[in-house]
Length: 213
Image (cartoon, rainbow, N blue to C red):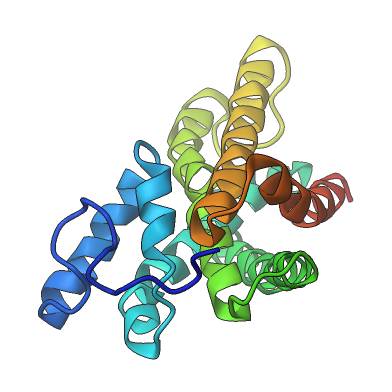
């Protein structure tokens, strides 16, 4: 099991994190997108959990968490109770709160499951794996303008085929995020698929319960 490889062996995604801080920080912004197409390499880079490396990716992690939270609250029926500027303010505040609570809570569950299966990684790294796995959910926020176009300010009140399509896209984003989480756990720990899936069951199950609550 390879928990902490040499910092110069972080995959083919640009210069190592020993490079100039500005360049290394930009690399993490790039990885925020690359996790959609090259997830294993991105999650392998998370093996470096030094304070310096964690600080370099802290801003992308925060943005992902907030955007994923906003996308989540806008997918709920509660969103139909707001309109105009109030909807935007509510989406940001409620989304930030929801995203951060989910980030810390599911991160704790993922960390506990990993530790039970022999992981030597930190709680912080577990949270970062969860955050990067949530990029598809954060990206689904781009659907909101389309919802506005169809339903006006009452973004969650539509019915019919259009609503079904948006719901299917939302479910697809969540499923994509679930797959990325398993890939991430496997890559960051160097585990088998079965072990990674077992570690991911807890946070995925709790996430589903929170979504249905």
